[in-house]
Amino acid sequence: MPVAGSAQRTAPSAASLASAASGADGGLRPSADGGASDTSASSAGFPAAAAPLRASMPPPPVARSRPVDDNAERKRYRELEADWLSMLANWGSASTKRRTKIKKICRLGIPDSVRPDAWAALAGVDKLREPGRYEALVGSPEHPAIFEVIERDIHRCYPNHMMFATPGGEGQQNLRRVLRAYALYHPELGYCQGMGMIVGLLLMRMSPEDAFWLLVAILKFYIPGYHSVNLYELRVDASAFELALQKYLKPIARHMAKLDVSPLTYMTQWFLTLYTMALPWKTVLRVWDMFFCDGPKALLRVGMGILSAKKNYLFKHCTTASDAIGYLLEVPHEFDDADALLAICLKIKIKHDDMDKFREKAKRIHASLDESINKPAAQTG
View 1 (cartoon, rainbow, N blue to C red):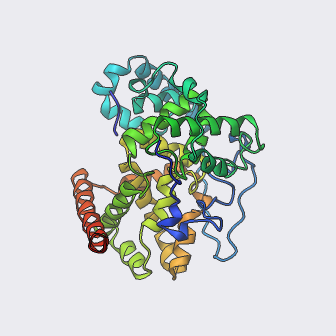
View 2 (view 1 turned 90 degrees about the horizontal axis):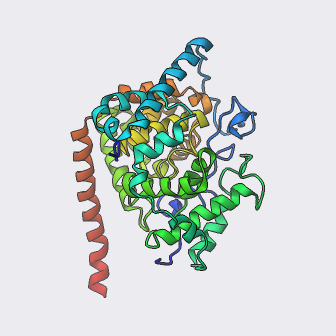
View 3 (view 1 turned 90 degrees about the vertical axis):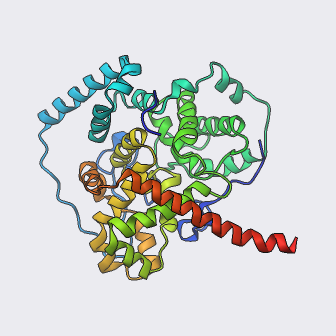
């Protein structure tokens, strides 16, 4: 969604569709440092030490650090902050009349001081809020079976982050409350792996109630169906992504096809967690800035940007499917330079009409597959 003007079931594991993307215990594979991290600064709540390199692969080339003019950076930050404060104060008109500017400054990065309010405004959270509803859900005596599935995943969410590192601590308690509240709010969906990583990031930036309503907006307006029982919309977008690769990044598409690597094997983890398990912390925040402005197209664009940026490594060092999948699930941390990655992403000029066509074609493909799967069952039934 662009700028905004219980069925008790077992939560589906991404591993059911992409076993290479799962850990040994059946959950989504944690990155080496427990999720999105800023290896250059411990102030984000993560350890400052960099994650160890994977022993099975040659070390990736280290990106050259760009010289930074601190005064210029501070000036740019204050200017962006002032722009956002002005727009948020008059969001009703700004969201319609200043659409081009909003898109531009989202890509520059939303200042952290206004990021929670900006995300909520972009997502249209105020249209969803119901006073007292969150408190009622948290205080509900209901205890559906899905709560046990949520409980098993609590400790997997950012275990190296100071907010969630203490078993039974306030961070884990808030994570549990928000996930349980959502399972009661939307019992048909309930809970799916990946949602905890999204909520965890939100809790690092805002109150539990604000995190709850922004989660509602994300799953309703931006990625509906991604976390459903059969991950239908995710499967459709994975097929659309493959069609986009074939048009915009043909050499990469051919290489991945030669290795027999379907986008679903790495996109499942990327998209279900909104890149929180694949990219460094600063870069994740910038991706989310773009996501709240541009919608799911931003996820596709970032995925193509990652493949484009790492194509030489993929061609040279990833000669098997396991090499490629393992590499893409733990993207090296030279992507700590968010500006560099997003510049690559934005150079890939994806036509809006093309993406619509790719999704429609992908839906026809999946409809045909579902029909062929269901027909024998109907005949035997």
